[in-house]
Length: 131
Ligand code: FES
Image (cartoon, rainbow, N blue to C red):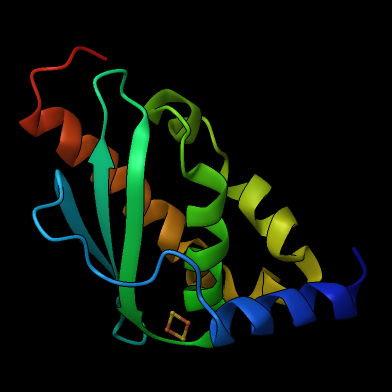
């Protein structure tokens, strides 16, 4: 993907986010924030008996990159196991979003992934399911 394609993808996800909205009674709810600007993302996740993401949604307020990143990331992890998600590297996400576009906005770009990883830890802490 070239630079313009990455920008178009970010704008498209910001304008028409996937997985947007709360899940009532979700197995885990986790909010993450970027302290430098106050923007937030809240992830709602349901996990099945095989530690696989059954349903995942988000709500949030923030810049184009943070909100588009959440939409793109959640699209990618739907149906994945928690272990597969834990293995996603921050650099993978930065590459997917377009390194030259988000490099000066790494906190915006990775807020979704850090919140998701924290959501998984919270799920493990509250769950009897072994890792
Ligand atoms: Fe706040 Fe991007 S400016 S997350």
